[in-house]
Length: 185
Image (tube, rainbow, N blue to C red):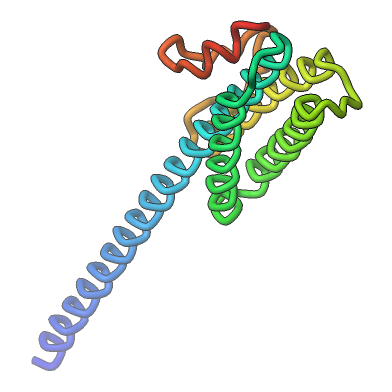
């Protein structure tokens, strides 16, 4: 009789442990899914803000080339720069190290290009608009690398491949900033 009672008790405890482990496993899966979704949302925001910032920088350069009044372009540039700064500040807390390194390099290059264009706009040129165009082309490539890194982290791509030279393949005709940004290349 004691064996029967112990057997029932042991069976109940084993079933309880099994349910607890399954519940913990389900909770871990939910946390991982939530973390992946938050990271994906952060990546989308960073990609969007980066592309808008680069498009605004490109528009500013084109306004300087055409010697037109750059006030409207300056306003858009300031807004896109502020947005990028805010999105990047949040991304700094979420990005894994490999993606963070790529984002940091791109952000540093944005700052360098912004400074160059502002000096040219203020009439204190240390460099030419041709040098700015070279920086813009290099920045489009940096954004491709950043996007590949983000996609690889999310498991959205198999093996990162080098992209073909030319305009950014992610540029959409429906994105007015992107079409302006790639039109002068």
